[in-house]
Length: 217
Image 1: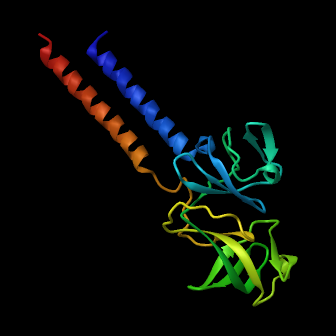
Image 2: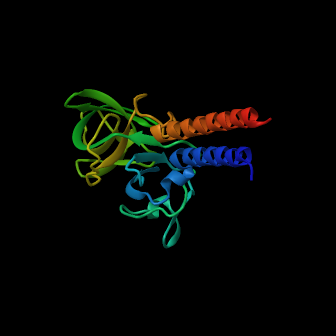
């Protein structure tokens, strides 16, 4: 087998490796082996095998694969391991920081937003469909919240965190901010490295061809 043929196969293999890396990092397969952290309303938070915390909005009727078989979102429990890919129709959000708080409601804006008064100021949060808040011991939907109602919540936010996942307390709320990135929003270092390998392979193929041309009588 000539050196040129070998190099061509090498480059093809590198391209396939890079494509697989992208699919694994951002595609539905990224959830295989992930652990369920929280389920709240129609939202799911998982911890992927690479340590990323991913927040999914799950459509009605969607089924997940775990060791015991297919289950719906309401049947997923904290600590369950996903054994199949997850394709909910949209990219998950990458969560950087999680905290549990007791806060007062500034304003509720149905169908999916609440503004809470926190220690560092007021902030908007997305309320997953089906979420119920506890106010003075009673279960209250978003539409029933009033200003200055005190609620307990687990906040999924952007920024850097220590990777901790405290026990779910109160309503699960997701920061409403452009700072919260989508998992497919940018290329990770590993993918860039994969394409760098492809470029290196192409360069090696070019050098190999040049040498063969020089060696010909």
